[in-house]
Length: 352
Image (cartoon, rainbow, N blue to C red):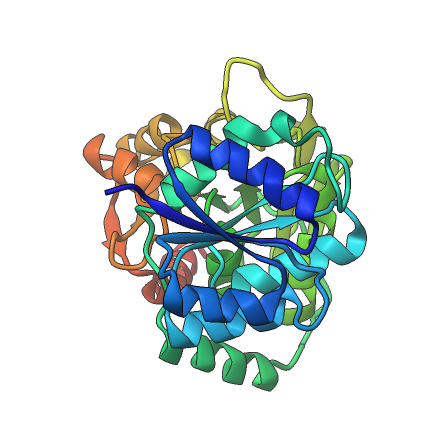
């Protein structure tokens, strides 16, 4: 039986181009012009996966997504433009349950959609194997978001005591938001995040996190002193590394290392931490994502006395990266996402 995909886009041309891509890969394809039709087709056509545009008449993609995730949850890949509005809406979609996103290379109507053909098929095929949040969890997320209050403190002094590293990819933005907002305002370590993401997205992502986290969140787009109680998001389309200058730990970006497939590279971040920090003072967390990025470096951190966490298959949207770390014997503990903040806080207290 063929895999079934529903393409939702208000542009007839985009629907045609996307149909050709998926039919060439063996999918049975249906299309919808707006969110209203998407909800109906999700119930009647019963697709295995949906690609969903954001800006559409009658009902936009976000509204449709919220209904889909409650009525008949199915993996959804957002296909959006690279405008600031499109980026912010994409993050909202990820929090509502979308698995991943692909950016249109030419704006709303992309005649050069073939440029993202490989990426689109890779993410759609991976999403078919992913884990979904059920409707009651989506309702819980909405309710909790309404209660969020922001409490910022003045950054603490620079530190040589330790660091938290977090690596993530597909499914990561939503999981990161849930984990990082649980860190208390007096958290005693800096946190450096390598999330596979385009440069157009990381600034907005850092701003979004800064709005919901108790700690200050900054995109790393220049050399910064590592300070306790701060979260640093590596800029997309670059690598984020920890260095040492005049005795102080710094975090900065550097051009993508072509030896590594994914960027910001978790492996490059982990190796840079090992070169500049006592491994026994490193906490490394591997979250959801495709592939194996960071598994070698994080396994080495554990081997040399550091602490590592692999997100469990129970909550990982895509279990690839955590599985690689576990199979290499590099996970001190394996935990579902909701238990990770408590473990990070416990270990960080022991560093003081």
